[in-house]
Image 1 (cartoon, rainbow, N blue to C red):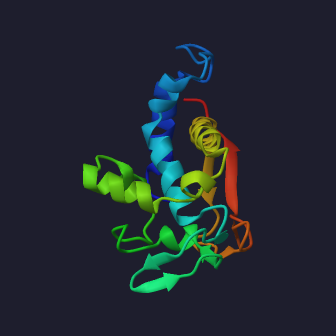
Image 2: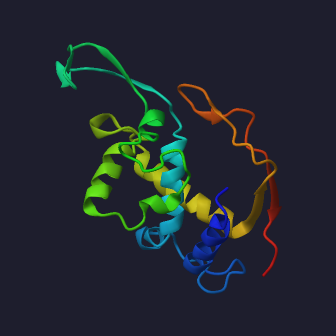
Image 3: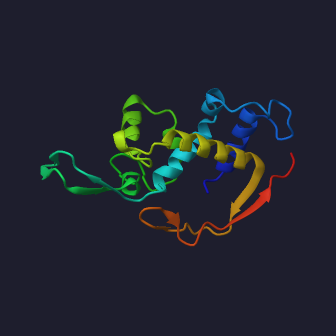
Length: 184
């Protein structure tokens, strides 16, 4: 885990949601305005899915002849593309194997354009996941609420390797020590 990230997520969640005891508007409805203030949780969700998308590869069939890098992919060809590889592309991502949610902060227009094209854990275009907006909102809220309510610490420094093609998951799970957050 990135040092200090969990604490930063917790501070953001406490600020946005209010205190856990119900004071400071902790029972306010979750709407677009509230979700947009979970900036670090959103960046954390994006960085996590950049490196660890749910699906590793996805098939598509070319609807027309496609010219790519001097090659022709004929109409009707089965094409396998990979969100896993796109998230590790050094042309699109500086230091691509380093986990850094802050890479999504303060992007220039050019950087944002590249990131928008290279960040594809839900696919892209007309065939992207129909539930991608809902999934992004849910994941952002879950990250924030978990940080607000739990203390977690990895049991080991070993990062598990991904396994799976259609559904990606960590080999051997992600062993963590989890406790209810101590009262502050």
